[in-house]
Amino acid sequence: MFCPTCKRLMRPDAPAKVWRCSACGATVPLGKAQQTGKVEATARTVAVLEGAGPTLPTTDEECPKCGNMKAYWVLRQTRGADEPETRILECTTCGHKWREYQ
Ligand SMILES: [Zn+2]
Ligand SMILES: [Zn+2]
Image (cartoon, rainbow, N blue to C red; front, top):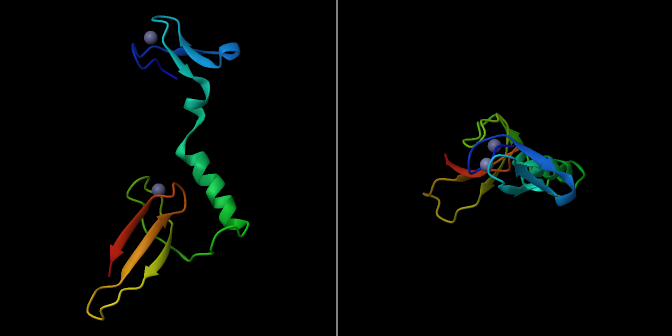
């Protein structure tokens, strides 16, 4: 964890539950540095595996956000026969959603 103000290394101050910069005295809440998108994605993946969510097929699409090579996908129904079908993809790692036109 580095100080957002002076970029020096910060030290955890457990009693106060903050990261404290010894150089300029700036503080950052302790939990902030530990909350990464990966933790959320893992919890989400576990939820899917446990059957809490719909079981979706996966494909070898690259996530434009994190570069993961696996994504869930669903086809979104369109009304007009001449409209292209839209494939909605969702990264299995970070949960990022994007669409692909076929
Ligand atoms: Zn500082
Ligand atoms: Zn991703």
